[in-house]
Amino acid sequence: MVTLKKHWKLICLMTVACLAVCIGAVATMQVIDNETEVAIEQVPAAVKATLLAQANGGTIAEIEMATENGRIVYEADVIINGQEVEIQVAPDGTLLGTEMEDDNGDDDDEGDDDDEDENEEEISLDQVPEAVKATMLKEAAGAEIEEVVKATENGQTVYETQFEAGGQEVEIDVAADGTLLEREVEDDDD
Image 1 (spheres, rainbow, N blue to C red):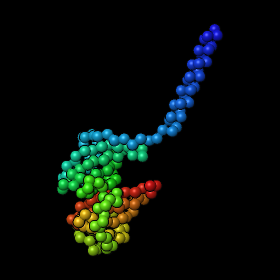
Image 2: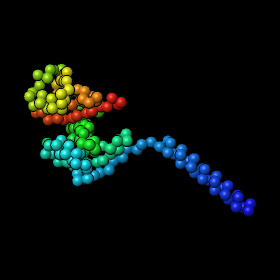
Image 3: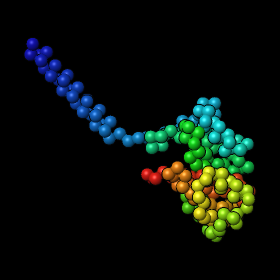
Image 4: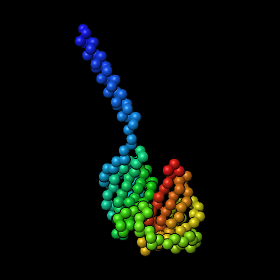
């Protein structure tokens, strides 16, 4: 009888110790961002529609389903007119952002050394080419565009503006021909 009691106490003690370790591990666990490559046929219909519209006839090279801050995001690498563009879309089809790779193979947002040739001039919306104005008004969807910055980046004229839509700050870059180069959405809690 004494042996059975010793084993029973040992089993209970080991169980409690295991539970303590498991609870501690779960409590300190951090959300891990992960990415899984998926085919266009595997993404939700709304995501597919947004990707195809943004690709605008370009080639979708790769699509990844990623978890960022606990939210699912679809990221597609698309080749448009010889340029690689990353398009980020929410599962409901909402465009979260686009990012164009520059000549150095890195994105234009990272403050690389290629910004040395950048010239900026603040202009009014009435001073931009009609194609640029049409793209900006379409993207703003009724939101007020207060200022436009005309910039030269890597020898290319780019028109930049910001506006607030749906409680979020949106920044877009548009090429001189009206092509949307980048759309960045910032949540108020970022």
